[in-house]
Image (cartoon, rainbow, N blue to C red; front, side):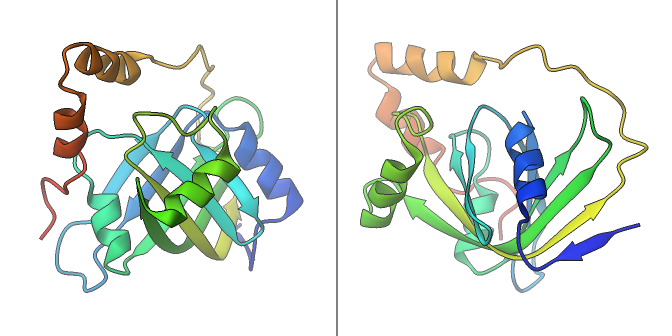
Length: 180
């Protein structure tokens, strides 16, 4: 049975902070286009308050999340208890995209710290929490966390060594794929 909340409670916040992976879903605000669903890892998410969550967005495929959020589309974060508690948490809201170099980015990056925001950060996505839902997650299997993949970071390290970092970061900053 689902339970609804107006904001993140301390119990939900503790659960979110313990997760090693989360999922971000967005859709265009007018319904004209495809929804996007992306997994996120690393220690990229921070709960700033009961009504605001932010994550560090690394460059990668597409950039539909930013396109949808910038256009005012909805955003949902989902967390699943894979290792211990059988619980699903969904955070619903609207996103704000803070591009590198903007004053908002600088202020938010300072709050997040250098351990989260680095040279390969594409942008920061802040979510204004509108609703929170919890549900059982009893059908979610157990998975054991073995460690972070370093593949993405190594990819950008190699690009930096070859002098192609700016080109790679620019390429992945533009929305690609199924954005209309």
